[in-house]
Length: 176
Image (cartoon, rainbow, N blue to C red; front, side):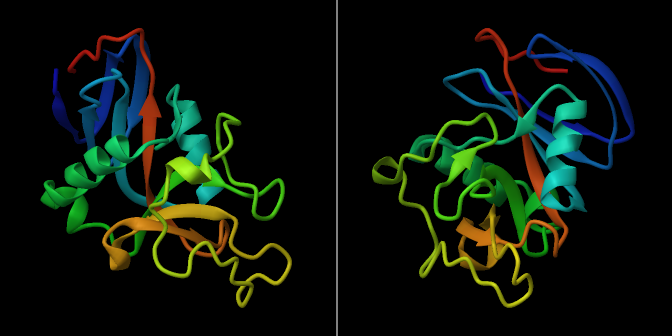
């Protein structure tokens, strides 16, 4: 079942089995067609860690996109929703990073990136550019608008970006 919802100010609801209270500028929500996850697209930019905290405060986490099907689904939602595609300036944070060990990418839930199964990096990425943060380099991953939403490692604490949260349930995604 597909559900698409646009939140505007204050919402208190049961979404995919979770009680969620949030104050939000427009957040587009859509249910994954096969696994029941609810994805929420935020167009109020935050630093990567702040975006993860915001998702956690609402009972979720930054989105984990562990297969091409989910990537294409999320990309289609971005491209097909003017409120998202037009508002996003540079990219959208997702829950992939190599903050613990350079080059070892893992999702916020601790699942390692399966490099052989997932090759959606933009050209020359990941590259851990260190020009703007010589101590850490680029450790957090975005879907990069300029490169047709392919993945890019970027500085976690240098640029605020829009972000995608996900919420889990037991298999039934309920519209608001």
